[in-house]
Image 1 (cartoon, rainbow, N blue to C red):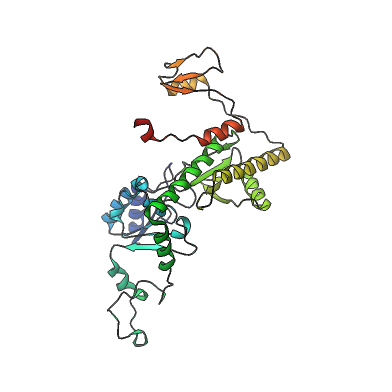
Image 2: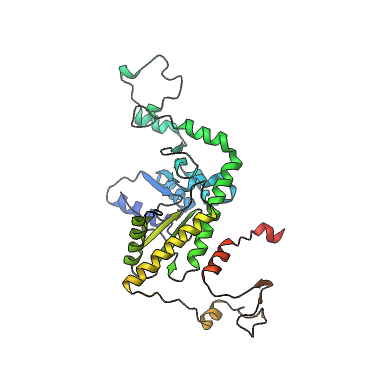
Length: 338
């Protein structure tokens, strides 16, 4: 098994995959299967299916796509951009039990050519043959087990109960609440978000050594008010915060964040650790943005209202009030241009 190093966005790209395949072939090995991921476990990152699929077709490899968590979000059209290149995949699976309100376990899987499974797993001893053999789909020929649980019924009930619009509303609300949590984290200088938030999962950590974040996670779980799961992203220990329940509310997010902040303060005081606020120098800002300062009006007073590129803004200290206010702001592109 080969693990391919991801790029700076934690995405599997085509060239590193091609290099690994060519290296294996030179060693006399026979590459035959590649697993790409849409929504990785650690950071909900997305592999580049277009590039990976092209390489798989070039070397005639089976491309399987693991979309365990994020696959549910593709019910919403605005998230299907990550599916670019899916036509090159031979199979794809996702878990409705992760985000579509179906209890564990429930996995949906599609294959482009079921004949490949039949050729591999078909078993026909006399004691397994019956008068209806070949007349209906027999899933014992699709997999190693000779039978399968009837998981489809509980998924069918959810689909019938909520419908497409209800499920889309559920997914979008989970993403909105994750955006709210992300805003709260960003407003606290002690924390950082080391990976881009995608969908309903936020990865965050305390600035500094991994030990601090690990202590925070263990203390949070030990208190029992919320449960956190860790991950390692290129050597950095992170905490994963995911919104998947249909019962989660704004109040739940604020309550969880208050717990996280409180425990963080407690740990830092115990260890006598102070995380300094990172300040961006005016010189650095001007170097990164040539137009900086060209559209600021009424700038002679630090606390006065500002007009920034035609938008009204006000300056406050980044305290808890600002964190809550910022987290509640949602401006959609459609509202701006309509």
